[in-house]
Length: 122
Image 1 (cartoon, helix red, strand yellow):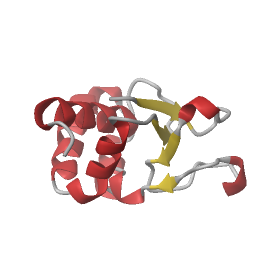
Image 2: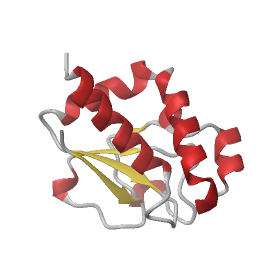
Image 3: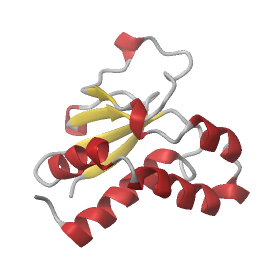
């Protein structure tokens, strides 16, 4: 598995491979042409309700991780192609949160890694 995460505000690199924005909202202050992407996977972002509940509060991190994973359980048709692509190609999940230790891209990367470890690619 080769899944990286990167902030949208960082310069793109050829080594990023397949770049996927995993935010429901476009990153503030950035023009669309400034963020080269292969896919904008809004449907893989935490729900608006969950995002508002979390509010980037580290004290709610564990609850956020569990709730977001529950949301992802119902979205396999959206995340499974990324997981399978990551078996043979670099995939970089792009996020916009300021907090590099508490964000949805981390949860999604770990979720995909667990699924691949348990189920493997098709």
